[in-house]
Length: 176
Image (cartoon, rainbow, N blue to C red; front, side, top):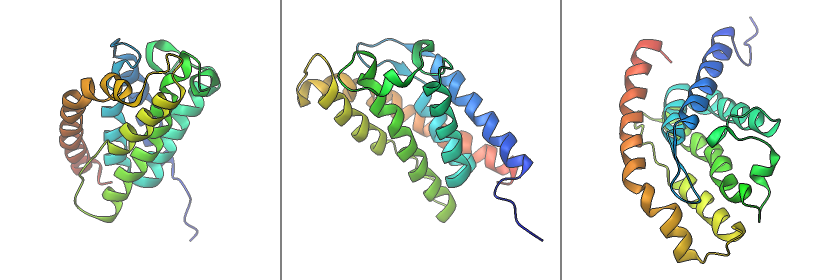
């Protein structure tokens, strides 16, 4: 019997987690150039529940929806302009692209071990470097870190812990 790349169940799970990422993205608190959202929480849960293949597909689908114009990014924004450096709207594109690396890392941990240590280091590093290099305000590295990392350390640690707890419980019930 031939094994399918994705089953109907896989597709349904991916769709549910794309929707979760979108809803969590829309929960936004503007904090200067980088808004606080529950996006990182949703990315961690997605990787922790769906694993490497399905989690990566869900995040890529989310990003592609935004690129083609569906308002799935923070503050109901969308478009390729989010990824064009040196524009006001392109300052946070690195974080969005960093979600792919983040879900891959979390998915690898889920798939290869029982240790589901969901870390957001990849997203922080990628997104902050992008912001530092391409922000139209020409903020230096220290100012970029002050704007993009420091205000988010405690909230993101809380999101990671809750995502780990949620992922663990969801995995028990879904047998994934």
